[in-house]
Image 1: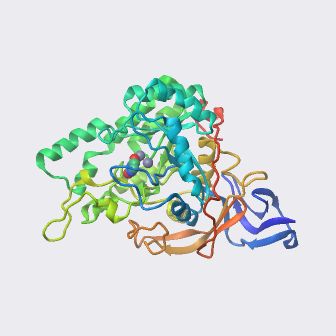
Image 2 (image 1 turned 60 degrees about the vertical axis):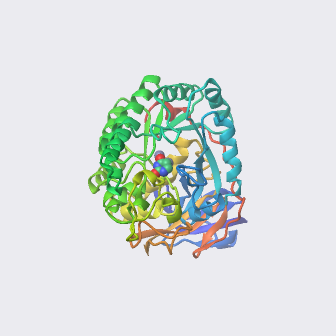
Image 3 (image 1 turned 90 degrees about the horizontal axis):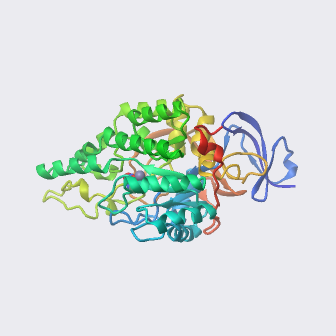
Length: 474
Ligand code: DUC
Ligand code: ZN
Ligand code: ZN
């Protein structure tokens, strides 16, 4: 007798879509094939639905003190919103300041995440390269934390890694089969542009995007790629927004270099015209939103395999936090000052719906590609495959049932992220997760959350060396 049988769904993997049943025993998938209803304690009819491996979010910032704000959600609340978006595992970053131990901060972060209803992991973060900090890399890798994040900007915020820090982290990461993750924006280009705004005293939302143009990102992207090539290790670039950077990646891939590129659904679906609105500050994130031209370049990057990963870069701030340092004009409008806006937008709950709708329903990518981009590739490159990221016997029974016919108009009222606005307000999607199963337990069903605080477990990760030696996740 199985604990659960999911009957008749279209079971999706990166390479196939097969109509069959999935049998679950305890927390694990027991088998795929045909099972009688009498063989299951509970049977879920998935006829007409797609069954995908649970979405993995490897890029979010929850309860992370940043630019004076903390975020709207506790980890438990974040895990609820995530679960409604089909997410069954997420990863956050250690909070780091100069002098902190990256290892201790990573463990402290994992501790904070214990209240999550879904499984979780942590990335280390580096802001300097003292011998003590570099020595922590080995301890983190041994503890199941083989990914190390660095920012090439945010110098004023005290979290930028300089070139030496990047090189030293890259070198040490290579020794322990670790993977550096980099936010690529040239601090120099951004800062000289901000100085020009200061000279004109014009800090409009629109100027935020102008201060961090495509080349600001592409220069840092190329530098990071050259560092990786020089050191001879793999690199993961987060939230890539444009074809200029992708062309650098393509050149690197041509040489076989393991440069893994992530983009986020907001760069595929939202554009810089949002900065023209009175509430444009709500859309301020880094890198900034671009134009439909760059979005098209990203779709091409997804189609041709230059981009193998997606992440939401979720930073859920409510209006009060986004606006906490702003003042108003006598007429009640905002005194626009992009320097005083905390960067980031909410997105964990809509990553899968946006990819299903804008990707699969619009014929740009297959559902198998969505499976790779939201789960399988993430599990492989971040080192938790095949425990996660695939529907196969022995893997965790983390599943999301998708109804490709379901139409939803995105709005603050349909999301569960505790904020009073939605940048996709009114955006119509076709294709939506309708049930989420975490380690064999149904945690979202019929629009209701049924998970439990604290049910999430820390997942130790280890990256297969083959992915770090040459480009490709097959
Ligand atoms: N970008 C954001 O928009 N917010 C947090 C960090 C980042 O890189
Ligand atoms: Zn970033
Ligand atoms: Zn981020």
